[in-house]
Image (tube, rainbow over all chains, first blue to last red; front, side, top):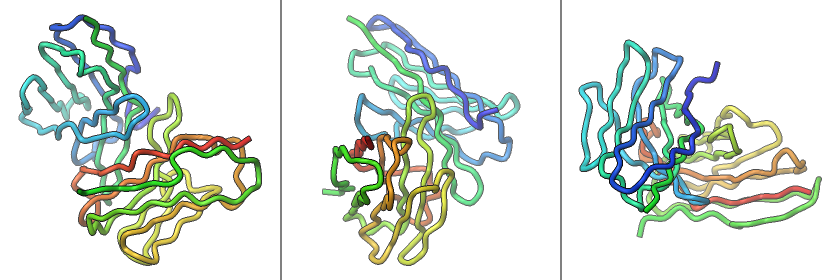
Length: 109
Length: 114
């Protein structure tokens, strides 16, 4: 079983839609969690950290469910500029980062 | 401007011809790392370095070498490239030991080995 699993998509949604991605992980000892964004053929960039209590940054909400071992990312009021691949990332002991394969989002006019 | 610079950005080479992909950062970060990204597999760590003269293997180190003689540079060396090393390569840096979760990536180097 992969350490991190994401639905690769693509998720095709119209502008203004709300879309949610999930990411499951297998190592219960994972310490911290993040969402990265990667535009086509470009480098990944940190979007937001994910806290147990859930956290929000504008239209983006991230949540962590340790009991079920998944994290989620909710995007409200999707914009064309949100089109990208979203990577789920785990930080394990010793500073090792594990990347999911990414979920592709395409927002259409 | 904070930067992580990789070179070359694109390279087509042939099996067995040694090549080096350079990575340089101006953020005075201790932690540097190399990843490769392949369809369906995500980003996989090749090697990482916590500081000068300190390097460790990641998940897929076979066929690669690295060195960290200076803080700002972390070159990736393919002594005898093979077609299965065709991939998109990213260098990344982080402050401290890299355990904050925030990595700063270079723009990527797309390598094709024929």
